[in-house]
Image (cartoon, rainbow, N blue to C red; front, side):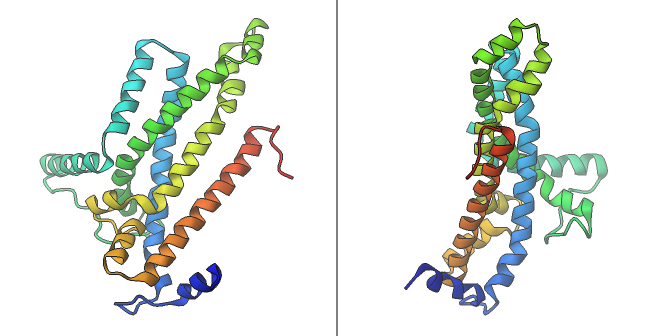
Length: 255
C-alpha cells in the first residue's frame, strides 16, 4: 500500500468514537493553533532581534551580560511555569484593581468577530511561549552578528569612514539573519502542533491538545491526519524560509 493510499482516504474519514468528520475537528483547532504560533513568533522576533543585536554591539559590557542572563533564564524557564505565574498575576491583579478576576473566553473567538476578546484569550499564552522562543533567537542573533562583524568587508567599511550605524543596519544585521531565520522557521513549525502543555495551562483547544486526546482515545484516523498536517506545515515553513533566503542574500539562486 502506498503512502497516499494509506493517508488520503483518512482526510474524509470520521473520528472512531464520536463519528464527527476528521476535517471538521481539525479545522476548529487549526485556527487557534496557527494564530497562537504567529503571535508567539511575533513576540519572540520583536524582543529577540533588537536584544541580540544590542548584545553583539555592546559585547562584554553590562548590557551584553544582561541580555545573556535574560536568554539563559528564558531557556531554563519552562513556558508552562511562566504561564501559571501569568495567570496568578492576572487573577490577583485584576481582582485587586478592578474588583473582578480576569477570565478569558472559554471558547475560541475569531479576531474578526471580537478582536479584544481574541487578544485577551491568546496574548498571554503567546507571551509565555514567545519568551522562551525569544531567548533562543536572541542568542542566535548575537552569535551570528558577532561573526559577521569580524568579516573583512566590515573592517573595510570602517576603514573607509562609513558610519557605524549604517554598517550595522545595511550590511551586518541583514547578512546575519540567515541562521536566525532558520531557527525562526524551525520553531514556528514546532509551535503549530507542539504547544500541548501551554494549551492545557491556558485551557486552549488547539492542535496539540487534540493530538494528545486522539492518542489517548486511540483514534487512529484523527492521529494520522494530525501528523500529516504538522508534516505539511513543516515542509511549507521550510519552503518559505528558503525563499526568504534568496531575498536576504542575492548570491543564493535556485535553479
